[in-house]
Length: 201
Length: 201
Image 1: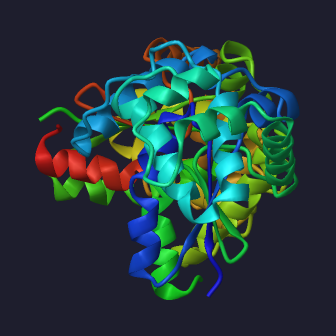
Image 2: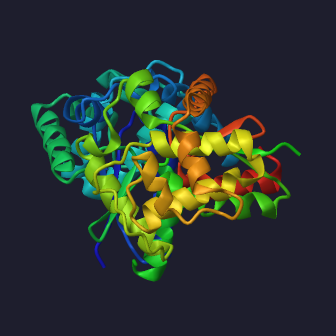
């Protein structure tokens, strides 16, 4: 069976929340997951012409409250909230793409480690050297990752992934694509599960 | 116990979908529902500064598909799709407010009748006279409703309801407010139910 495609931005709390559930959800239905890091700064702001979510009147306030409510509901001990200044997601995105291209079997553990360091521990991972503070999975050297994240090849890989995501119609984090069917938002994960159970409708 | 507050726009398919579930959901937890008709044209476009949903690149295409998928999932026989030209919601909003002010016990049945006529039967209810085509609940005369919907009082009531909704932070259709806690989107109805079961978290 084809893999689920999981699109997320490292700066998106909802993307982080979904990252904690997507692997088990897929495994319950015998599926694997391919992870794709996107940049909302490109899709939302440049392509859609919208303001950042938290700067949107009314909606920004709602999102701050909704994120906290989700965190409480699921008992997550996050140190960073939606109110913190948003970090630059390029370093994490490039580091992830670098691993995905060069050590693909460790791409998901690296993404999980970066997301946990940022959201769970509250680290700002804007600068390549900050990756040294992340507890990386065995098999990933910090020097190798810091260097890779700064390579032109990593920048090119991320640009290409973001372009492909926009061409595929992806506009939000998280988005899950199952057999060509797109589901946007962590609120849709239960619907994704139902879709897998029933084989669609 | 305090009532649930249900905010919807007559032009919103997701508002229609939620309208079919909200009364039973509330009743299961011994709650009543107060319905509020809002105008996304005011909250989304004027206050938030956003484009209409269906005209937003990427998201518009997603919404068309998501609405159809919800319809299939819930076995709804709607004649109007998200692709139809959007009707002017003022007539329905004003008619609803008119009934809410003058025959409050029939406000919800009238809202349900208007929503069904528009989404279920596909009628365009932009013009006051089109209300004559709606199968109205017993106790509501078509002449009385058509006249009321055109009264300055109905226009004033709707404006006031929309202003109050924006002051309360409401920005989308549907939104449900439970004991001061706001939930946006038909995808959140299961979370609303959980919130009522647990008494919050």
